Length: 168
Figure: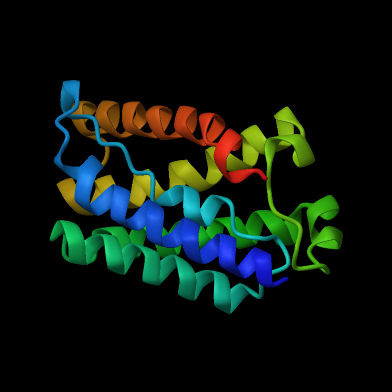
């Protein structure tokens, strides 16, 4: 249990600092934005209480907002992603039972490709939809929608690549 808390604290600090100090200053082509801070929410243990997951999502977004100056957009998006994550856990019968133990973390090796793909897509898309809707005050503009989907796809690829680092 202590190692799980330690891993999540290190993951939180690393991803927030990486997002706020490094990635947010790298210009990507086609106005894409890479949000690695959503990976912290993605890899939180399934057994965590719902209010704690929402609080950690909010704190993660608030820290990124503080470092990037985005005035609450990341906080809103991260809290929404934590809420969608909780809905997935609650309504997925298999992970609802596994949630009784706090040490079960969502990984590709534990969940399998179809389940992890659906889980990651729901959490990542919810984050990006809220962020870009707040950023542009509209979502269904073709350009905004394309940037949102491209950024979500980039983050989705990073979620799979990060399994080597965070799945241990």
